[in-house]
Length: 513
Image (cartoon, rainbow, N blue to C red; front, side):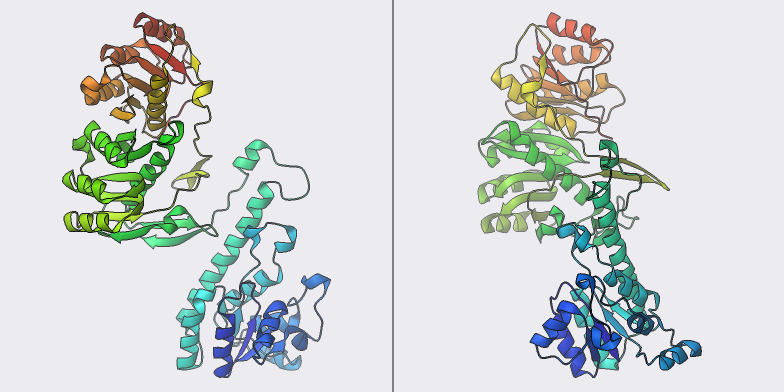
C-alpha cells in the first residue's frame, strides 16, 4: 500500500504518518510535508524520487507529473491500466492525504493551490480504488480501519470522496469571491457586482442537526459557510433540551438585537425577549435585572415560551427573577455564573441555557424558494440619530431622542408592517407583521396602554395617510420617527404639528419580511 502525503496543515501529520509506516504503508511526500517527516525520522520517498524531476517554479510544480497522477488515477479493474503502470514502472497510489493552501487566511495568487486540488480530485474520482483525506480530523478513523483490515472499505472511500469534492468546491468558491471583490488585476467590479456578483458560490457545511425543523415533522440543521466560524460555533449549551430550528432562528434575532440596543445609550444594559423572531419586550436600564423586569412587563403574556437575551453576565439575582417569570424556551447571555446556572437548572429544567460570543456582522441574505433565490446585503441602520431631520415645530428632548432611537432599532428588527412604542428605555408596545399600518399602530398602543402617554414611536416605513399617526397621538404618543417619502408627507407633518408632537424623518426604510 502506498500513500502520498502533501499537506499545508500539518496537525497530526507525524502521528498519522508514524501509524501508516508501522502498518507497512510506503510513504511518498512533497515539499514541507517531506521535511516534516524527515525531521521526525519517518522513512519516506520524496516526490522528486518518484518523478525523477525536481520541484520547479518556486514550488508551483511538484506533483503535476504522470508518475504521480497515473498512480492515483489508474482503474485497477482495467487490465490496460495495469499494463500501462507496469510498462512505465509506475506504482499505484492507494491513499492521498492532502489539504490545501489556506487561501481565505490571506487571499493572493500565490495561495491559489493547483497541485493539491488536482491530486484531491483525481483521488476522489478514483475512489473505487483510492482513499483521499482532506482534513486531520479524518486521520484517526482511517488509521484504525487500516490497522484493523489493511485497507479501506468501499463505504469509507465513498464518504472520503464526497468530503474531498466538498473541500475543493469550497476552496474554489473562496477564490471566486476574492475575484468578485476585485482580486489583484483588471477592471475593479462595480459596487453592485461587488455586493451581488453575477454568480454566487456558497459552500455550506453542516454544523449541527437540530431537534427538528420549523415544525416537528420537518428535518432541520444548522449550516455554516465553509471556512468561516460564525458566532454560533462558539455557543456553549449548559442545560436544557436539544435546540430546534426556531430556537436558533429566534435566538439569533434576540442576540443581535441586544447588541444593537444600547449603542445610542452608552453604559446601559440591554435585555430583549423575542417571540417568533419579533420582540415582545426590550429594554435598556442601569442593570440587567431592571432591564429584564421592564422588558417582561411590556408583554408578559407573549413572553411565555420565548427567548430571553441578556447582553452581558447573567447572575443569580437575575436568574431568580427569570425563574419567577414565564417559562422561556431559550435563555442566552454572554456568560452565566455558577449560582445562576444552579437556580435555572433546578427551576427551569427544559429551558436551553446558552452562553455566547458577540455576533459577527450579517453578510448576504439568501432566501430560496424552489430553484429561485433572492439575494441582498444586510439591512444596516446607516443613518445615525444625529442626522435625522426634525420636520415639526416641536423639537425633541434628549430623552425623546433616546426613546426614539430604541423604538427605531426595535422597529427595524420587527416584521413589517411594524410600529414600536418606547418610553424611558423600554419598548412598551409592539405591533408586528400587519397588512395595515393603522392596525399595527392600534396593536402597539393597546399593548402599551397608559405607557403610551408621553412615549416615542417608530414606524418602519412612511405613513401613507395621517390615520396611522393619529392612532398614536390619540393614545398619548408625543414623538415619532419614520422614514418619510410619501406623497402625503406634508399631510402627515401637518397632523403632527396639529397634535403638537415631535416628528423625525430618517430617509431610510427598514421593511422586514
